[in-house]
Amino acid sequence: MASKTTTGILCFAGGALTGAALGLLYAPETGTETRSWLSYQLEKYRSVLADLTDSLVTSRDMAGPSSAKTEGQRVISDAKSKAEQLLGDVDQLINQINSRKGV
Image 1: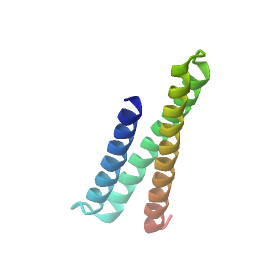
Image 2 (image 1 turned 120 degrees about the horizontal axis):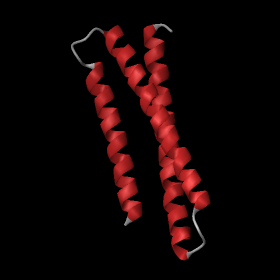
Image 3 (image 1 turned 45 degrees about the horizontal axis):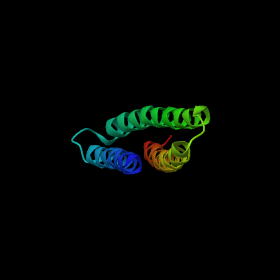
Image 4 (image 1 turned 180 degrees about the horizontal axis):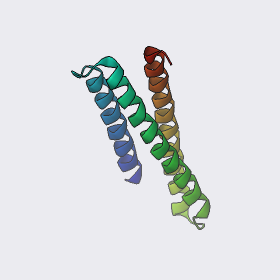
């Protein structure tokens, strides 16, 4: 159950982030203003996601021995993998935005 919940949350967050980014690219603001704002937001969410990944790894290391620990480690590993994929996607978006800004 935790695996489906974690997967659902990560999928929702990734979809929301992607949808927001695409929606903002078509916003009535100028391209420069929109790209600057989007770059700022992506950097902020990137750091939040990196902190979440670090806390997942830390909590996994602190857990006591049990059969639940094995399942928990699997869920954490899956979440970490998906979080790292989201970080990569965010980095790509930031690079694309910066290249359009001429940075």
